[in-house]
Each structure stands twice: as C-alpha cells, then as structure tokens.
Image (tube, rainbow, N blue to C red):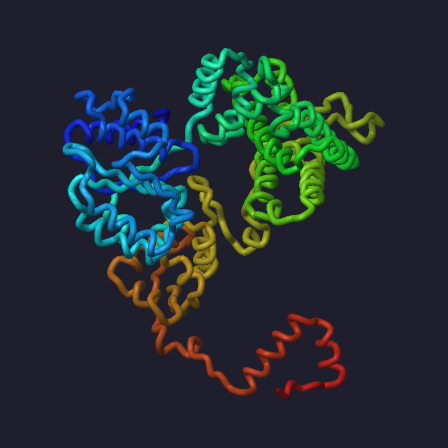
Amino acid sequence: MVTQEHVSETLRRAVSSGHVGHAYLFCGPRGVGKTTLARVLAMALNCAERSDEGEPCGICDNCTRIWGGHTALDVVEIDAASNRGVDDARNLRERAMYAPSAEGRFKVYIVDEAHMLTREAWNALLKILEEPPPSVIFVFATTEPQKIEQTAAPILSRCQRFDFRRIGVNHIVSRLSGVLEQEGLEASEEALRLIARKADGGMRDALSLLDQVISFAGGKIETESVRKVMGLVEEERYLELLDILSENQHSEVFPLIEKLANEGYDLVEFYHGLLDILRTLLRLRLAPDTELHLPDKLRDQLVEHSVRFEAEDIVRMLSIAAELEGQGSLRRSSNPRVLIEMLLLRLSYMDRTVALEELITALGGAHQAIDSAGKDGEGSPESGKPEQIDEVKVGDLPKPNLVSETSAQQGSTVDATNGIVTSDEVEEAWARWLESGIDVPLGLSGFLRSARVRELSDGSLEVTPLPGPGARKLKEPGVMKQIHEGVEPYVSRSFDIVLGDAETDPRNIEHITEKSVREDTLRELLRQEPRLERAVEELDLELMD
C-alpha cells in the first residue's frame, strides 16, 4: 500500500496480535486504496499461510479469489449506492448471523460508498455493530464521512476510523513506471508527471489515464501524447499569456482565448493550468533555486518571466484567479469563456506594486533637496544657473518639529532632556499627554478622552468622567496616582488632580425634550442633505414630524 503505511501497518499488527476490531471506517479521496486495503485485510484474516507478521501469502486459493474480486463464501462486497435501503441492511444483518465456512476464518463484509446508505439502513445495522457476532468484521469505505456523521452519528463511535491520504506525485510516477516496465513500454518522466499531477493524488485515476495514453500512443509515451489525451494546454500558451500580462497588452487577451477555443482546448482545463503556472511562478520568484520537476528550458523561461513581476503582484494575481473557482461560478456557468476573458483582463489591468520610496520620488517630494553649499554661487537665482538638486535617502531627512507655533506663543517650553512640550496650562498638558499615549493606564484611554477636565482656581485639575465603569475604575487606589505621574512631565509647575463626581455633575445630565429631539433630527437631515439648510433658513421651516 503506497502512502498509506499509517493504516496498513496498524492493521498488520492487529492481525498478527489477534486484536482485530469488529468494524472499520475507511475514509479518504477516491482512488487511494480504501477498497484495496479492505480486500488485503480480508485476505490476511482468511489466509492459511499467513506469516507471523500478519502478511497474507497472496497465492493460495482464498487470497487469489478475494484479490480478484471473485465469489468467496466468507468475503462479501456490497455497493451501498445500489443497495442503500433498509431491506438491504436487514438482509445483510441476517447473513452476518451465520458462522464462517471454516473454523479460524472470518466473515468480512466490505460496504463501498457507505455514505449512500439511508438513515433507516444505518439504524438497522446499529444493533449488530453494537453487539457483533464472533468472527464477523464490517469494513465501510467512503469518500464523504461527513454525510455519515449527519445521517447516523452513532455509527462513528462503533467503528475504528482510518483516514487515507492522497498519494504523492513521486509515488504515482514510481508505480506507473513499474506498470510500464511490466508491459514492456517506455515513457518519459515528464509525461508520467503530467499524468500524476492530473490524477490529483488518486492512483486509480492515474492508472486509468495511463491506459488511455497507451491506447492512443501505442509505442513510447511522450509528453505531446499525454497533452492530447488529457486536453492540457502547452506551456508556450501560458508563457505567451505572461508576456501579455507583463506588457499590459489588454487587447491580446481575446485573440489568445479565441485561438484556444478554435483549437478545441477545454477552457476550464486552461484555467486550472493557469493556477498551476502562477503558483510555480511565485515559487520561482521567491526562491529561484527551488527544486521543481520541470524541464530545464521551461524552468529558465519561467525564471525569466518571474523577474518581470514583484512577488506581491503574483500573490494578488493568484488570489484573483483563485476567487473564480472559490465562488463556484466557473462550474455553474454555461459560457465559461466570458468569465475567463474577464479574469485575464482584470489581471492585465491590475496595478503594479510600487515601493513607497519610488512613489515619493515620482511625486518630487522628500527624495529631492536643494544643495545649499553653493559657495561659488552655483544654483542661486542670481547666477542664472540651474539649481543643484541632490537625491537623499528618507532616513537622512530631518525629523519634523512637532511643536506648533501657537503652543510656542502661549509660553510652552520644550524639555531638552526628553523633548516633551511642557505648559503652565494644565488642560493643555492633559490633552498632550493623552495624545502621546505614554503611561496612560491600560483600558482607560477612551474614558479619559471622554472625561470633562477644567482647571480650578487653586491651579489643580478637576477630572470628571462620564458615569460608568471608567468612573468606578478611577476611584481605585493608585489609579489617580498613576495618572498624575503620567501628566506631570507635561506641566511646568506643581499641581494636583481632583476627581469630580460623575453622578452629580450637571454637565453629565442630558435633558431629552421634544424640542431637542426635533433639533437633533433636523441637524441629521441637514447633514445628509446640505441643500436643505438654505430652504430652512429662507422659508423659516420647522420640522413637524
């Protein structure tokens, strides 16, 4: 069993130790070996020549009949898609009550597509799964275990569940190479990799595709034969598309799709190939030395195209392209051509990522500075020569002075040690402290910003928060001390902070009257439609309702 060692090894040890469960649930994608492993388990349980490690011999009469899918007395395979009713389940339950054909053997019931069973059928099997007869084993194989959970959740707790993995490309290529060697045929590695990627982790699908390609090619299997059988688009078409996107040749999108459609290519397959090529392009852009199983010529071409895009641009392109499949519109559409053309046009019109430094330079801003050296008069208006402009880095620019002229005129000073602007006005210092966000008690920033502050006659600062949890928090010991220590560096004199009563402060009491409601409503209407204000003023209108 390829890639499923976590399942096969567990079952082999269970058989060798005699601790086989009475019911198993095999879950996983199609074509990864669920039914095959169920047959191997049945072979191991009923093989007279079984090894001590739990491996069946594979050559005895029981093994050959079970492996070939022929009639066997003790192994029954049932397709739940065509035997899904309650009567079929009752018949299966009655047959399971009979003993195996010989001592030491097991009756194994393999139920494929188990998610197709009805709720009534599962209920009919529930009792026998709870109290199974001796030497009876059920194996349920399904690709959609979530349906079983929705239909018959109690069944899951009665079975040992094994989740099968998708088979990797390298394992599929190795298996296909072995099959071709047995058949005396040859194939290029790239052709086998195309088949393996198309199989999407399913060995059965890979073998079916290989059979089709063999019938088409006859002799040696080449990449071109695989592309024709599977309807894959050549890489040259994707390279042509990358040229269109990098050069913003919007009008060339339509001829490209027209050519693909006239040559009979499936546009949905073209879309899936586009996702793969963008993903590969992104990997090469981020790490050009990434090991990818690509022909050398194609790899060099993709590396050359990848440098035309920034990594951020490729990520955005891949995200936009993936949205089409994520929304499911491509599968539902009767005309996918239009959707794909619109997708390619969006990619061609997509703005490129621009670095902040490049943007500043393009705007003629911080990257340009006038050379003030000019000892000989160069660059001065009097000399008549053009001014000398040097390009400077953003980090070399002087930091702006955050102290406003108004603050300076009001007697504010700057502490040379820490650059903090201090003031005699406590209310102004309070605002600067909150604006800086330094040493503001955690969770109180919003409450302190909404609080009402005023300087009392004795020079102290009264802080009156709005009623609520903020006001209660300020009454806790140490909180006001922490606030005082935070504001203190911004005040150039000594001061005290007094907590006002939020409950009794008349400014916190809002009287809601009919007139105030109308005024608020009218202000909201004027905000939404400014032209009403002139009509209200000239006609002396009043809001009635």
